[in-house]
Structure formats: C-alpha cells, structure tokens
Image 1 (cartoon, rainbow, N blue to C red):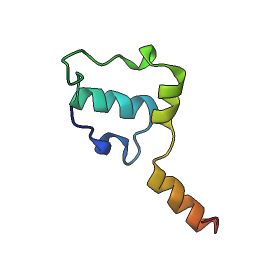
Image 2: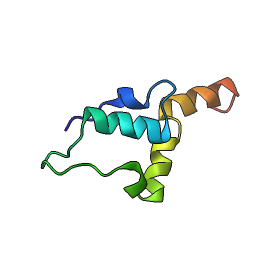
Image 3: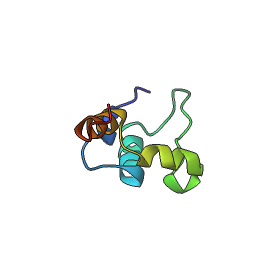
Image 4: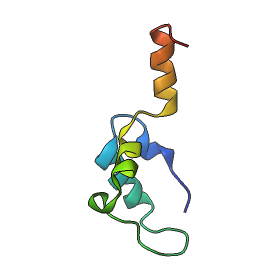
Length: 66
C-alpha cells in the first residue's frame, strides 16, 4: 500500500479524508481490509483531523511564530 497524501490535501480532513484514502487504498499490504472510521481509535481519528504539518508551519509563519 502506498500512502497517498492527496487525500489529506485541500478541504478534506477527518472522516472525509480517511474515507477517501480507504477508497484509494482499501487494504493493507497483507491484504487485510482497513477499518472504517467508526472502528478507529480516538487518537487515530484525531490524527486524521488535524492540519498537515505544512499548513501548521505556514500558519505559524504568518502569525510571526516561526
């Protein structure tokens, strides 16, 4: 499985981004199906819901916090 970051770019975050990524990569390398959003641990859902590192750095630079 190759991780496609395009699912996390743009307006897609959280559930929408994860579900798009699962649509693009429905199984793990071993062939096991990936779990649905509701089956994910709270920390994993949080990880999918937060802004990408590049977006956070850009916001910090814009605010003069870099």
